[in-house]
Image 1 (cartoon, rainbow, N blue to C red):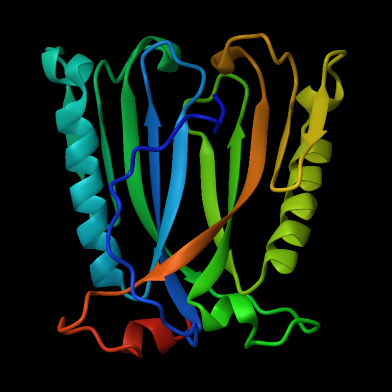
Image 2 (image 1 turned 180 degrees about the horizontal axis):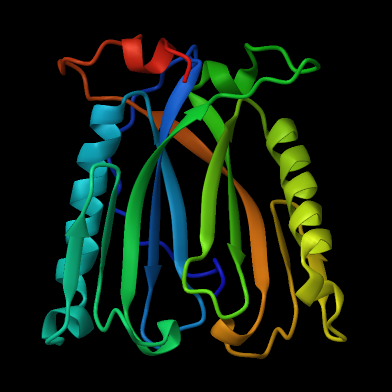
Length: 234
């Protein structure tokens, strides 16, 4: 699986706001189409848990309802939990031969490096940087897909390189392969073994950095710019 699929996430109105939070809430939206190697794996960031969970419900239902393959399946599922929703068809089948996805919400501490001031041009415009770290182990259906938030592009890219190298070097399967790869780009790194093989029968991953507007409620709504959720440590 890869992250190069085109996201069709519905656009919402965003309010420009200064990033003065110690914690944000990241919504990860993953969707894998039937026999399509280019999965969609995108993230959105929110100032409160409530907003993130509401968006999670909307996006999961939208993807679930809009998939003809899932809707026509006799074994479709839509499993809701407090912080994540899993949906799709044929839950016991090979990932490549079924259509499925999930949405999950995670609290993220907004990381500021010692050499990067807390207030930057980026943060003043309500912009944060989210690092997605995806790793798929050999013949393991439970992929790792985590997100981390940063106050600057510099910090996020530094962490991207560090995490990609850690996973790449730490995999005995990848290091023992003749056809291993480590492809670096400005905002993403892909690594693994046997790039032409089935995702289920190889070990691979990627790290990518995306800029996110920190989403708040529209004017007149009842979530203040500073909330207990966004200020508390965890």
